[in-house]
Image 1 (cartoon, rainbow, N blue to C red):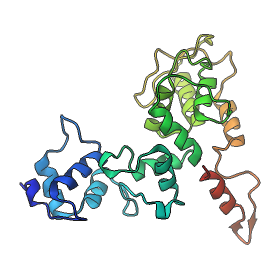
Image 2 (tube, one colour):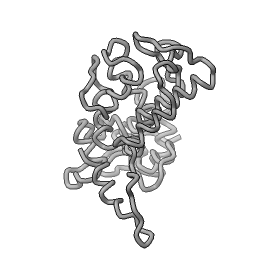
Image 3 (spheres, rainbow, N blue to C red):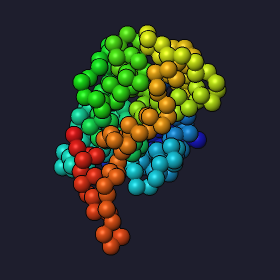
Image 4 (tube, helix red, strand yellow):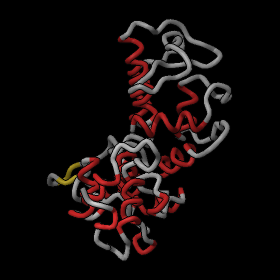
Length: 252
């Protein structure tokens, strides 16, 4: 088994510094560790920390665990990092892969909203009707913020990697499939767990409040979370609004 001192210097970083950065990236930097220093040292002797990270988490070869420079500020990941202050590899909170996964389901400005909310305390109900926190509160009947904090709502979106509409739609579906939907609650509905993330109690009423999968997904189609607008047109087989869509999606 290799020692930390056996790891060759790379990018002006000694073995200990590479190991520390790798642990942060794979979310294994607090005891008890999933991987021993010896196992990770063996891997770092053979490959640099980017390759080792990719192999451990199953990331594609086109994605690194961390990238940030103001010289490429126009890239979506760099713009997100700048907004949430996650710009130091030593204290990395989200890998590039995690940010790109969120960007697959939410416009960039709302990815930023969710990540900032995840570090917040207290409850808010922003006036923007498409704000993910506002949407979650609306469908969970918690516009007063008495039941869930912003962090609780944001963490559910981050962990499940779903936009607010699909999160609620899947939760309603789960409750319906299990036959647990009954009547609505005026004090704040608590939906069943999804992917192991549980709300305060079992599913409470959605049928009388008119919340159905169809109604939720209808709203999704009209929202900024629908990436390709219905009015897209093809000319000679080329979609003419792709660039406009990408610009809007990645706007701050």
